[in-house]
Length: 327
Image 1 (tube, rainbow, N blue to C red):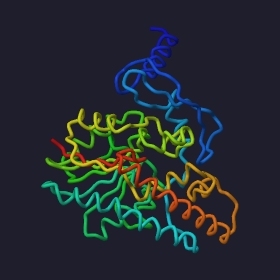
Image 2: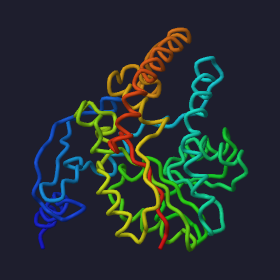
Image 3: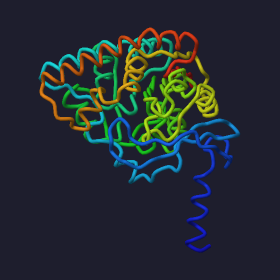
């Protein structure tokens, strides 16, 4: 086969839906990096006409995708008033995640620590450790793993899940919060999670919900689409099929996250106010101006809270959190 034929075959394979294999699709809209402004390139979000899975098209190469992740993509608290306030807020809203995961820990008969894949700076793991749980983090970013060790004092390694030096069946619970939508091959991560979990171990995943009211309301400006970092955009049926195909049984589903749903809607309304987005874009602002913008963003987030509670009550929240049991 000639080099030209190989290239054509590669493109043809990438055109196929990763869920059903169909090459038939329709374009929903075009978008660019609205939150972090890492690129001015425009991307398509397409829908498979067979299974209705949404995805970025064409997918960037691994090298291109790496450029779309800023070096300070995660949260690490500073010493000024705004940073301390943000740290307090994040601890508060992460309580929602902690309670969901602790219920999974209590339900499983498996023994072993918890592994958080895509741990970022490790604040979630620190809170779990403070509750008496054994934890470990994994992230593809060396800086994130270093922050988890040095700032939040939790063990973390820099690796991809498929190449991490971890013993099979050594974890009781494995968590992936907003990880699967970033992957070229989500199936491989779920399959690896199955191998790493002990019998009756629990997998907790969270992804944006492309069947949410917020997506219908904001379209290409919905924060959950996060062009160009989200390669796949799951609906409930998509993530459930993925987990069940890889050997998991669904235990619980939750459509509300105090950390993500109201703040995500606030960012959809005004990405310019998002605290992390401003920090990544290095927006020049004095400490007083930064604190003022943070307070305005917090007020907008609180205003969004009633709407996000209603949509979640109708199983149309902007995120889906699932606990699945290893069969």
